[in-house]
Image 1 (cartoon, helix red, strand yellow):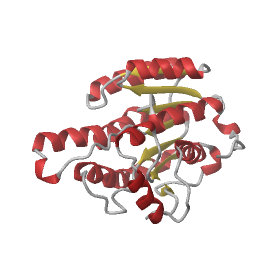
Image 2: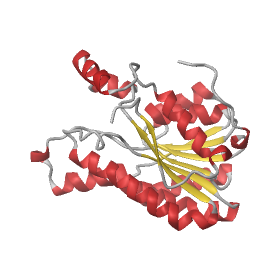
Image 3: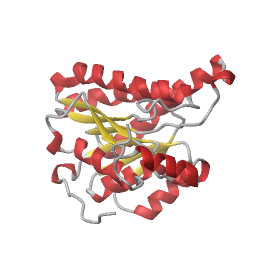
Length: 252
């Protein structure tokens, strides 16, 4: 893994909000923006992991605890972070859970809970920060998608449905917010080697099969998702909106 990554001067001092920031890709995002000297605030449900990450990083980073399935809780958490860091110029809708489930066992209540976990909060997060971005003269919103549905992945239909919907949300909000110079994009990770993936689903056979589907031979570290997000958040990407940016080693 390279240790010679880009610095984006336009991100220094910029207020950034990240959902699901305490672990996995989210924690890598928090670290990456902090290294760019951004004012980073993140929300998460895990108090212990959140506090541990802040202690590890130091720097200009803060967090608020909330359950993103509870929209009022999310709004309050965002308001708390905005009070500390100012209006967000960057929002990263990262939080999600790719729990496996058999289509035969899915109930209406489970389906609704998966939508609340994986897509509903993304829209309401955008709604919560957009007016502040408008007043600030623009911003960048990055929604986290997944290539699982592009690959026709099985064993989690509620998750893949929610992730497919991210693209529709990105496209329509890019149109609605574009006149305010607010850019909206989707980052599409492949199979990213987070601790959660390694603990639950990484096996020798699964890795071998997945490598065969990728064009590149290397497994994907979360840092590479963070690098794409940094680019889209920066002024370097000023003319990038309404699109998908793949970080999947050519595995579609």
